[in-house]
Image 1 (tube, chains in turn yellow, brown):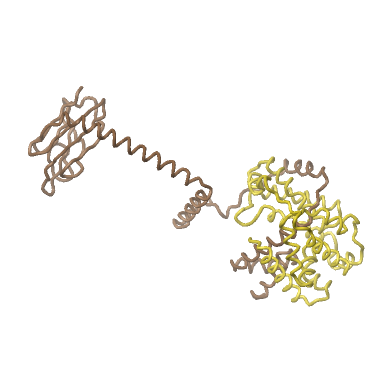
Image 2: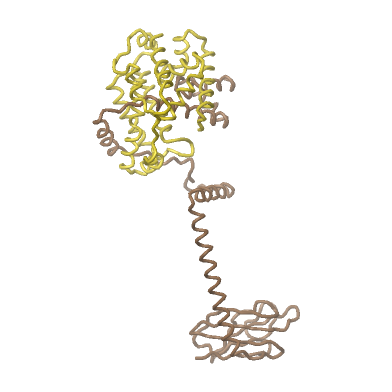
Length: 212
Length: 240
């Protein structure tokens, strides 16, 4: 289990280590919010553009959580079909398109890992196993991390968290564990883990300057 | 579960790190606590940043597979929460607020602002034209002005069925009396309206039947009469 925690922790630290000078932004790209709104009115071309802009995020996140490459593809496909079905529910006043799609993707990925494996066994099996696909060692993952200013800032902000905050958030978000499972993995009382997740996110929010 | 306890779950909830029981509890809590919902939105945004931090290009065939599937997938109908259901009236205040919100949204988009400026410019132009035409018409009318019995002058300019009536220097009337216009033809007269204002100058455009040969003025009781009861103070022939 410690290995799992370390693995996620290293990804975050590696994200933190990126050179801020290499930041690339999406300037000039079509506004994904507008594209998603158009997709919500049945525009399949706009939807294809949404896919092009967000598929790497979704696939990266889903694969990070699900681990298994072929399952990650399945889930990614499910996610985008769901994005299409629900696109007219997207409200840009309530958050970015990327955030909306990401929330949907994460939930699906987590549902997949929780249903795919018996909850009673899962954490121990995964913890005992080496990372199942050698291709997602952190070096490879880091190579794929887009050098965006946002994530460089994320890295610096993650450095500002306590170890427990960072590990709690990482295990929950990237590995799809419930807070009770995280408490078990970190041998920490459940209320403490719940609190660390919340105050860690709040600290990240304040550091990132992320609005809703 | 008490609210404070439910509230500490908000971080775990934002990370999808809760089971179904917890989820139901915190969603009930969120529904009753707008500030909590706002906090959740912010924490979800943080999660979104985490979610975007590990991008990885999916295999190329996935795109075609997704596009194939969505082409055969029906989209959800729009939610009804923001809509009027059939037969259900929105309270006026809600309707006004919604309209105001729509206007604000349009202003934000620059739509209303643009239209307003454009409309103002048009309105200014129209007013200037109207003032010019009015001045010219009054000048023309003044050439045909005839004195009215008891004071004042009546001038009429006609073009086809459109008639411009210009009455000037009307002496004030006692209370309960009005000046009334009449359109006269070979068969009789019909009211052409009450003169706005009981003194000074009054102008108005009116449409008359082609049989009308003259415009006459009388003094009538307030509210006007269906047929003239007072003496004709002036009669202006229409060129036919």
